[in-house]
Image 1 (cartoon, rainbow, N blue to C red):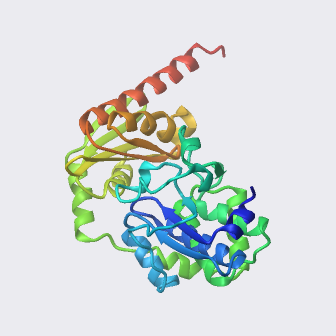
Image 2: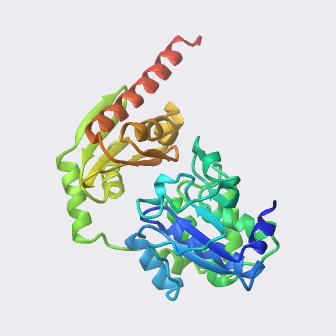
Length: 335
């Protein structure tokens, strides 16, 4: 059954984003909601995420102040759409058990494929070659013959800017899509401005604590930094990368039976070692913490229940094995 048919037949759609939804997730959720209403004006929809980030709230206030993203799912939905994640666990504790039937579930995502995705959704729109879920949304609008209005273009461009680190991780297709959105009416300066935010005091403290607790491992020519904080793990990772690490892995346990890990690496690290933080590190580590993990080559995470210290140590060892194997292979190669 085609995406268009699924949306036109649905009377009560639930659109889901991952826990602590970032601008790519939130902006693609809104864009998808508008696509649905264009194809099915009489349909009902509900947007839900187990919390959204502070930055996402700022983007909403800029471009879609009337949009409500709930932290509850409601009931009687006949179709479920997951955006910017292909993992049930990444939906967070309040929403991870809401999915009822793979035949009624669609996943639209740009992360590395979750091995268990077939148990979640029968309908899959996966493009790990694309920079963001917002970029996928532009393609869906085009495929379905729906025009993107200026406000939706603002949202989609903002999501792309965020997930590409202001187009640092962007190739020809991504830049072409960005130009397409600007032609559709997106205001590049306003999109950039919506993403400018000073970290609050608690986030800055978390970054400083991560730096103070850091353990540094050298693997060949690479510097791998691990640390622990109880909040803002992703921000702490970025801080450690800015301080000089090639790879940063930060874990936290903000409450009982909750364990989170975030990881980041420099682009050069992946290009030269082939180590994908998503499939090579966070996916297996997800099992150690009794949860799930995944993501991109240079940015990934995991959520679970226990074994934080073991997970951090294992992360380093997984990286070490691949890097040393790659190095040995290169050394053994004939010149």
